[in-house]
Length: 560
Image 1 (cartoon, rainbow, N blue to C red):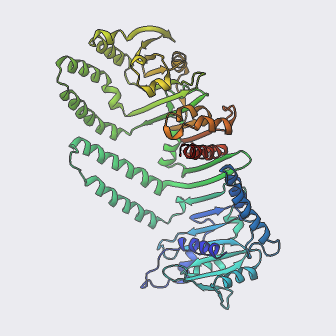
Image 2: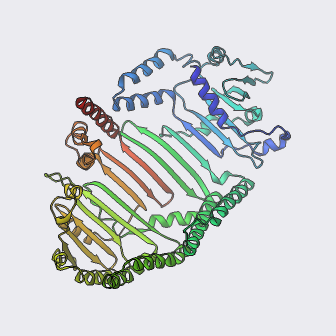
Image 3: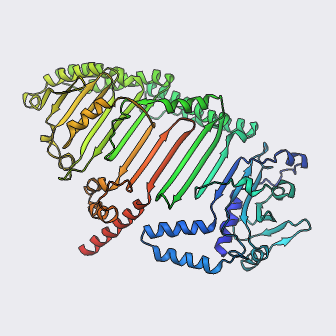
């Protein structure tokens, strides 16, 4: 329990800003000014009892069930209804709250710990050589030497909690204590969650934060590394300006930033999420809402049976697009100058000219998916990229192929198929695949199609079918970024790495037949009412990697 107390004291220290020795004391009127029922920052942690249950659940998945049982047994043997665990109530949440003041040093910062028995908690302090001295107003003081710079900690009991602060005891004045029921809102499901209210930041602090940001980014704009051209530097300047504007918008117009880490034992899922809202009727709120309406050419083309899929679409602001054009021109010019063959340079020039509108559009929209594996352990590929002038690019490709040696021209069969009025071209590139590509896609040709707004490629056993499906899927609103991996399906792909040759065996043992949705990892970024970033993994994913590690070690032991 000595370690537990050290952790708690450090948590309270984190909540406290440093104090200058020459800082004058503030009047009570100043202190009253920062009182609030809605703190700037709240950290909420589920009860110790639930944390232990979550740890036991994860440990069992990772193959360390015995260690978890020992912790669980210790907590159950030491905790009682009357005194809890060393005076701490293990059935109620804990955490901290901070209310920032304009002068920062007058901010309120409090660590909250649920108490089952005040006397047992005080005994705990005595046993850890952190004896508390009680004042006339019920305020306790502890000066600990467990940290490099000894500082005073203050706490008082109220509302079945102990309120702890460091350095400035005004944070735990009786008239400033917040009701834990209002701090820790009911219905919280995340194991660990934090809420930062930008809207509750004092205007003075917002101005200071934006000012510091501008200074930092101004220095970044001035730097011009060796080899950076003027066009690249101007693009970097515009990029820095855009980042500065967006971060300043979050500081000035942001609502709440919510972070959450959850262990959902019922659903069998682990997740980390971040959510940001803008205050109503602000540009930030409008920009976040616009992201939720943005469509991707490939939004409906990823398929539901992918071992791995990826989607990203993003549009650059006008100022960045204008600065991007000269950088593109420089890159194309340099590429053409490096080509010494006049015929090839001429063909490349035509090709780049066709690509020019796409390269300068600043409209990034790309996707791919690997589906399968098939019975022979090969995957089907679908990949696509948005184009500004698909017909022009297709014409340039046709002309480019005509300039190739005859043996290479024979590998390309234009207009081999048609789907939804779009010509599909067959490319027998598989004949020159390297070993890894052949292992992934098998001995199958690639299929290529140009729409007015996209290039789509299909490969592998069902590449033609996947391409046709993508051509007919149509645009769809969705996340700005999405990555998904189904480990049961991706195991054969992972096995191509020498470190993961046991992946298929581990997947069979953990997921059985696979494809049941209990093997997925995903990362999603999307807009709408709020900007959301969410990483999630099914709980069995932990068991899979633990089993994979066990089999790796077994193979290593066998080889020795």
